[in-house]
Every structure is written in C-alpha cells, then in structure tokens.
Length: 295
Ligand code: NAP
Image (tube, rainbow, N blue to C red; front, side):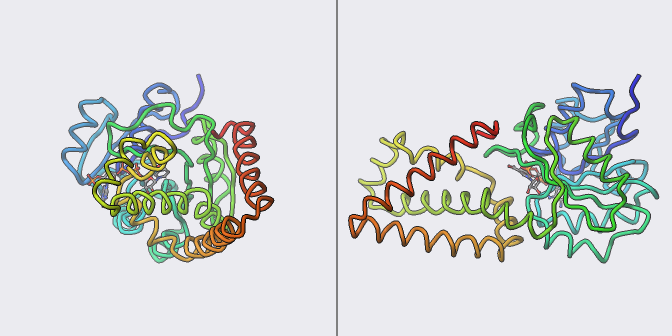
C-alpha cells in the first residue's frame, strides 16, 4: 500500500478550488489520511457536510489546523495573508503551509512577518478554474492537464517543495517552479488582462443605448458570448486579483493599449498587411494551445 502524501490535510475556504481538491481526494483516498475542512461561513460548511467532502468540518480555524500536516489556504487573495497569519501560530512544527492564490508578490510580502522557521510556506497556483464559485462549483477533474505554478522562496525546504509538487501531480496537474515576480507578470498576461478586457467589454455593451443593448444580447453568439462567460466570474476574487497584482497588470495593459492603438491605426490607414499579420498571430497562438493541450 502506498504512503499518503499527507496524514492530515486541512483545506480552508472550500469554494471552487478547495472543493475540487476535496472531490479529487475523495476519488483517491490513498493520497491523504484525514480531511479537515474549515470556513468562516456556516452555509459553506453545511454544503461541505451535505456533499461529504470532509472528515472534520468546522468554523474554528485554529482548532482546524493544529493537527494538520499541511494547511492549504483556498480563500480569496486578499484573505490569504490575514487567514495565514491567524493560523500559523497554531500549526504544528514541520507542517507545511500552502495556498492556491492567483497572485503572489503582495501575498508573500504580507505573510512574510508571520512565517515560522519550522513551518515551510510553499505557494502553489493551479492554473485552472471556471467562472463559477462556491463549494457546489468544484469538480474532481478540474486540474487534469493544467499547470500548477509553484513559487517557493530560494531558501524553502526542498522536501516540502517536492511534497507539494507530488500532491498537485496527484491532482492531475503539471508542475512548473518559478520566481514570484515572474509568476505575477505571466499571470497578468495570460489571465488577468483577458479578464479585465472581458469585464470592460461587457461594461461597454451595458452602457450602450437601450435598443442596441437588446440587440447585443440577441446576437451575442457572434463572439461577444465568449467574453460574457469570463466576465461572469466572482467580483470579490477579481477585485482582489486586480488590486494585488496592480503593477504587473497595469504594465501589460499599457502594452496592450499600444498594440490596440497600432491595430486601430492599421484599420484607419487600410494597412492590409498589418491587419492580416495581427490576425495570423492569433491563429498561430490558438494552434499552439491546442497542441499543448491547454485549449
Ligand atoms: P470561491 O469559490 O469564492 O471560494 C472561496 C472560499 O473562501 C469561500 O468558501 C469563502 O467563503 C471562503 N472565504 C473567504 N474569505 C474567507 C476568510 N477570511 N476566512 C475563511 N474563509 C474565507 O473562490 P475560488 O474560485 O475557489 O478561489 C479561491 C482561491 O483560488 C483564490 O485565492 C483564487 O485567486 C484562487 N484561484 C482561483 C481560480 C479560479 O479560476 N476560480 C483559479 C486558480 C486559483 P465565504 O466568502 O462564503 O465566507
């Protein structure tokens, strides 16, 4: 029989991501001996009980973490540091603290004064999600073939990094270890900017004159619909992501604005070559995503 990766795992914030981890663990019970689930919201805990996703289910965060070999924070980015600071003093020596936050630098800096030498902190960001949130939105296969980006500090315990990497591989993910700031720049480009654009396009459509807005909804299938799926994402989560990754996001937004202005210029000047080149780059990117099994 294989050894579990963790004897006891505590998941705090069992929403889309946390409940997907829990569901996966229910299908592979050999990975973790005991599942403790904690949240501040009694309605969330009721759903977790109903779905049978935890062995111990509690709103007492300090009690929840005290016997855990790994504590995984699955709360919104803005809550990771405060919740981490609250539970760290109650964790047992040698346990691992990890999270699944979508942004890194501000979280790592806010958590730094609270970290302990005997509790390694290994941030891990699974690049998987949907526009839905809450415990009913999760599913066991969410992480299959998706990347999970680990951003340990340079002096982090290699044993702890390997255990978190093993854990996410068992969730179905592929692992890449990278630097904190590099993570934030990449995610600003591939995730945060596309969300910003989707929210903005939906806002623009919504402020159109009444008659035109109705037609946008009627004929949405022509491309607008894909933006509305992304724009249906959770406001708290995305507020936190934008505010916590503001430097990297504003920098790629600036770059995007220049490229959009260049495209506008090409259209104005009827520069067919630039227009075709820009569209062809999009097609090439789509093709490589399909080849890389990320589409
Ligand atoms: P979610 O479905 O909204 O779940 C978040 C959970 O955290 C909820 O149960 C929420 O409960 C709880 N929570 C919030 N503040 C809390 C606090 N202070 N103390 C205890 N529990 C708290 O969110 P999610 O989509 O799973 O995202 C969770 C994390 O994963 C975020 O850091 C996000 O950046 C990251 N992530 C998300 C995606 C994605 O696409 N969704 C992808 C990768 C990573 P109540 O608010 O009801 O109290």
